[in-house]
Length: 165
Ligand code: FES
Ligand code: FES
Image: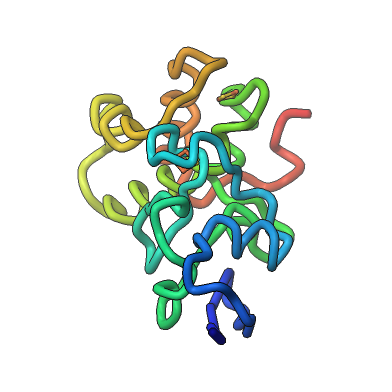
């Protein structure tokens, strides 16, 4: 079947098997390997992408059902050469080690920050609840929570030269 999907603001047309999962469309057909693939059983959350701004585990969604929706992958977070504040937060607060869970964590964080934009300050409890469907085997979560809090406190990010090396 033919499917047209919009990913990071760009439309793609592909001939696919109806059973193809979104994670495989993104990685194998579109070359967007920033979306990681781990358990394939909806447990780890490393495959999270945004579908119309909401986090979705892309191993649970058929690629064909992505038609008509806007998909955002980690490659779409950077804009005009400027890192998203969430990406800067992970850099500033050392929110990753091996990086396998990181794309999904960042996208869930972006959705949380967008949802709460202009509201009361986001609490660590809210951050922990938001990422509760995602597993990190490396960091113990504290640095991830700190990274997301940093992004919440720096909604405009920082100038690139201010980011620590
Ligand atoms: Fe999708 Fe693990 S690969 S939840
Ligand atoms: Fe390694 Fe999270 S940084 S799994």
